[in-house]
Image (cartoon, rainbow, N blue to C red; front, top):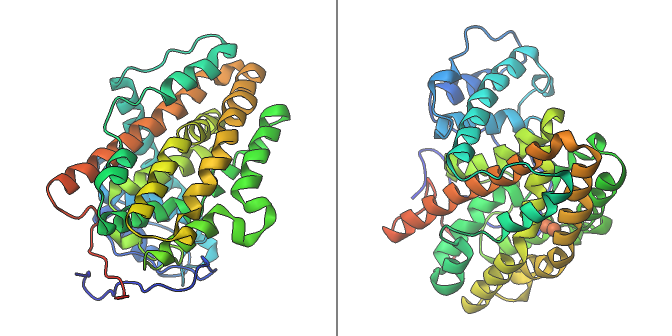
Length: 355
Ligand SMILES: [Fe+2]
Ligand SMILES: [Fe+2]
């Protein structure tokens, strides 16, 4: 099953490549307005629709925001580079961001939010959040019972982030100083494979996708991704592109690193159970090793140090950590709910070449 007029991507080689993706198909008023304008040269934007009327979690708002942010990454084929800093487009993006950030803050507040304590206690608070794990676990489900089709779906969901892994967090580097900056650079250097293309984590994920018979070109599956998936990536871009949210970005990266080892080991085990070879599992195996070190660098040297150096950011560090936990929890339950009903979790079906 594929959408009207679009074909299922086909697997290419094991490298992410540099080809720009096509603009996606609109999902509502906000994205339709944006996509219509981006298809033409930069010009003043008149009477944009009001994002304030949309739910922060809607597919339409999340896609519109995702497209705005992608202008700062690889952009899209045929889109004039002048749109990236076009004032009218930035104004529209800012309105989307207000709705998104307000929505995420409300979800965090509705949970049991961590209360900021002393700056030197942030590391301890992050560890308690990372080991909290109250909700269902996607990796535990996948390890125990996911089918190959479900593993493929999950790889498609994660491709939105993993094919640009580390890029959104890198926005923080020029905004940090001293020990926190050095710690982030240490982590990011590993994420980028120490400067070796084949070892970049994005490259390793591209190999996994190819081994699963999926198209690993950047942005190939954007039309397949629900709003709850796009929100997981938009959250990092929001934090990364605003200096005022650098503390939240650091908290986000810290939780990423501090919750990685067990889940990555489970995903590797799931792929082994399903007969996927070493090359396809390497992305996960590398993370099990790397993140056993990164989790301490992230908690102590990066987030802990930032809190001590800039105590005014303590609340933001914790907010970033709670925000990623909340948005990932929504992602997990949305997928597990669909799988429990024997439904696909993507907006379109995926076809893979027969072996
Ligand atoms: Fe990584
Ligand atoms: Fe890592």
